[in-house]
Length: 270
Image (cartoon, rainbow, N blue to C red; front, top):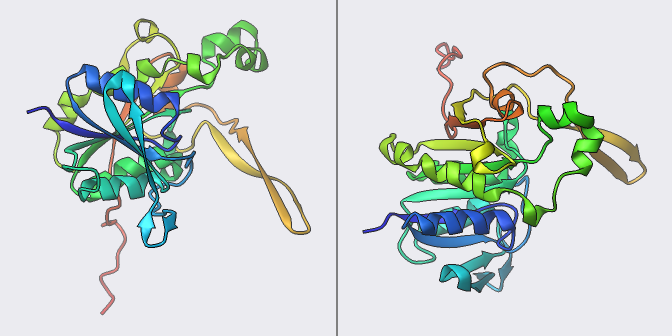
């Protein structure tokens, strides 16, 4: 019997990344359940939020004819969708959750805020293995060296022309390792935006102490705050997920859902 997998994301059910991931999963002979937010839910982490009509969570069925699937667009966060799928909301519960392909890398300790990663961590704390997979859309070191950051960014393709299939292939390549790993295991995978054959390989990357960009407060005023994203400007740490991506490799990191910290001494409390 084929392995049943939930394919979800935080960019929305119509995003090209989730279609690439579902298409690759189908090609691998998996039993695919496609359920994702009706609209972009980026940055929702593992939030359990949903829009209700009366006492019902809003769900829209969508035919994905090229894959022979019926998809479910849910007015909820990726974590919520994962949770209800594991409880049988869309038929038999999945054995593995595939979340992505996210538009933009999810690297460093900033993965805490990602809805893509949040869906995978929600799966883990409910006893299910999961992969969160993302496509790095920042220009590579070679591209920047060829003409500067601004020029490299200007030459990047439209979203539909990006290599989501590359990231999806790396995620599915790792599936045998995931299913052999302990229950509740989560792999965080990031791949460069280039053809599969042009990626230099895949490496285990530790979580960088920061992401590729950071949020800053750009302006404040009466009744408003405006934020912006900017590059961190910090040196890249060798061996991290960020470092491997800048060198043209895909990166995989095994991460853990919420757990206790044993190093803090609380022994004197009654």
